[in-house]
Image (cartoon, rainbow, N blue to C red; front, side, top):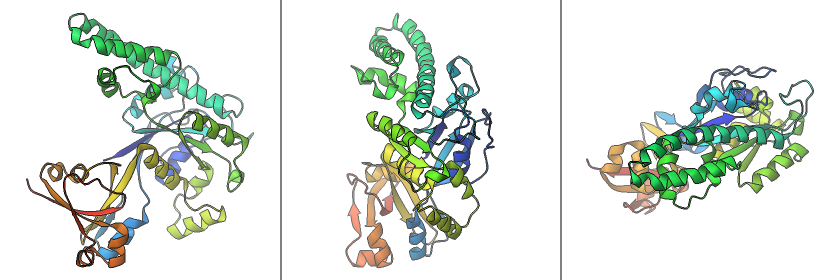
Length: 367
């Protein structure tokens, strides 16, 4: 499965700089003025996982294929975006297909970097962004409510959906995001959720963008306020320095490690952000490994073996027979599948098997 993440925030809070860092390429212009990004930037970043390279070494694989994350960076949102102010509202449709939202929040003071609101205030900034996202969802919902409401006059079976939509409309009007709405009849609202892909229905990960002087230090007051807000609303946070992350672009692995060590960091913002996205969305990895390639695959926690096999190819799920499974640790320690089989550590699992993090799998199927 493909993981897609949308990046939102006010203008000039470090979104494009973060995007460049996340994708390890200068694909988005970054400058010290609002609306630098005027087209949605899209890029795909690999999920750093040293286990894939280790599997390739064990199997002498011809190539290594990492799992990936698709990032979409849109123009900064401002007050009144839902009414046409600024440019970001033009591109909100680009993030409706995303699985999660990264909301970049400025958490550093620097008089040389302008702020569209004139001062640094994370909670105010969050309020502006999320109000505009709610208003954008309201516009989409009201259009569908008008259409389905007219259809319901002739088709009484739509009455429950109309009632559910009205409940969601009231919830959004009151300033609540769609993800916190508890419908009396969830099934009745499902067609609306599926069609509209409401932005505020998606989980949010707050990205606290700090200055280089904040790295390795206790959280500053801005980050503390952001984390308190996130905890209150059940959201995850990750703290990075986008400017420092941009400096990592183009460095070799050894240079990157030395650079991170100099800041007392164990991993980059890319790795921390993607790891948080996996946690937020309930994702995990499994592997396939052999002479041709070693590859990481992304699935949701709780998926059974046939559904995981379907990520590789739909035929694998349709004709699933069994899965031969070895844990990553056993596979590496024993030097591959053959030795794991000899030691009795290769398990044969059927259709009910629930995949575990780090499984190395060989699927057998027949179509």
